[in-house]
Amino acid sequence: MLENKTYIHSTCVIQKNKIVLNGESIFSNEIEGFNDFAKKFYQEFEIAYPKFFKMDSLSKLAFIGAELLLKPIIDPLKENNIGLLFANKSSSLDTDVKYQESISESESYFPSPAVFVYTLPNICLGEISIKHQLKSENSFFIFDTFNSSFMENYANVLLNIKKADKVLCGWVEYFNEEYKGFFYLVSDEGEIEHTKNNIEIEFNK
Amino acid sequence: MLKKVYISNVNCITPLGFDVETNIDNITKGITGIQKHEDKSLMKDSFCASIVNENDVDEAFAKVTSEGKFTKLEKMMILALFPIVNEVEITDKTAFLLSTTKGNIEALKNKSDESIEEAHLGTLAKRIANFFGFKTKPIVVSNACVSGVLAISVAKRLIQSEMYNDAFVVAGDIVSEFVLSGFNSFQAMSNEPCRPYSKNRTGVSLGEATAAVLVTSNRENAKVVILGDGSINDANHISGPSRTGEGLVRSIESAMKEANIDSNSINYISAHGTATPFNDEMEAIAFSRIGLENTPVNSLKGYYGHTLGASGLLEVVIGIQSLLHNKLFASLGFDEMGVSKPINIIEKTENKELNCFLKTASGFGGCNTAVIFEKIK
Image (cartoon, rainbow over all chains, first blue to last red):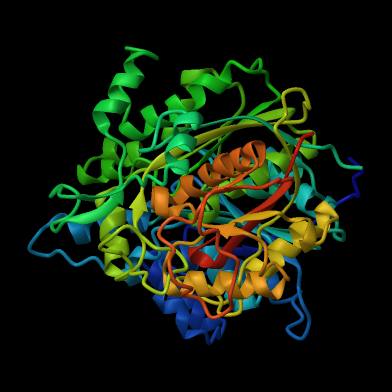
């Protein structure tokens, strides 16, 4: 298969109440709990997207990473063929557990459609697609640990067979207040070569 | 020139049979797996669903192995893969893909760390992988209701990238209290077997099944070649399809462009057809936008219900049989046209020379997938 060189154009890491964008810490605070952390981010960065508050934690995590990496490169007046390639370990289990609680006790039986819809991990891709109007390739995978060789390979496939012009990759692990978001944009321009090794270096930074 | 990728073997485990032949016999006779169930452990009131008899699963599984402890879903996945895994030698270039939406979600009924571990999709995948001795890391595709057909598309792309030579793909989901209550909370459940595209439809019937295929670059024994695929988001709504069918239209166009064919080459569409008004209407609009309004189309949900992460793969397995037998299967449950853009619903099972079919699926999160298959002559 003919391959063009691809690059890691930009990166974002969200963990332990801290956001690092392209190697630079841009936001952190000591607040308890991811949702309050996310709310503070929303306020400080003037996101102005009220739907954000309806999202579950997994979608909020994915949304923030996508916001930071896509905003600088998206032209809202044009079609942006940016594929979304996301993965995690715990799928939507954080919300699954909450939903299960809502149907476990017969006295408090109250299955809510607004919660149920978030019991699928790819909903966060829908949220990103809507926000940035990305009518593009999107897929969600589950791995025990971050699978750099799969991510590298599949992002390259999408670019090489011209299904996408750029690919936003994301590892969005969230369960029980433990989380890590790692995002990077793969493109034909950039300074870091898009290799398994470099992806791992960025992931572990 | 990209490598050609084929499907060379298929199997499925459903209420209509534990092999493809029995399933096809029952579909040909117009038999549905959807029945009324009274099971308080699943739902307070009676409900309609297509459920595999657990005793039948245990009996079949006992012939495979007596060792280990497996859930119903795991047994059904192993049974689906078992007869086809012998087809090729498992190497470190053999991928294993597993498609599911909720896996062993029923484990969450017990509140403990073990049950959380059990509910992880990676745990399920590892158990199936270990059973067969796959050498590569399992790849779990969990992309709502397009997962099953998306898994084929992913397998094809990974083989084209030369990361693997072949891939076993298994898909499965079961009818659980979790999913029943969720669909019920959307008021999307039908109280009779579902009627896709019908004016008289009353909603979705859920179902359970597993299906398995071997995707390979080896033309020997190939049944179909995968001509093209696309999976494009609507960017419109997280729990409802785009009213214009935009994501589905683009997915089909992406698949047709790659296949280098136009809509006239497609002889049959195996559509999603969940029997919700929004889904059915959206599909009809999308098909007519692409000039597929006269192409024979069915939904197999009338036979199997909506089997979620299994549905796309199961419907590909049956669609391949349509090509091989030159047979269009009736879209069970259809009577009067219930979509605003007329489409060519297959009303009676009939023989017809078939060469090429399109499989589509759409799901929560605004996802869509389209894959085109051509018969090997």
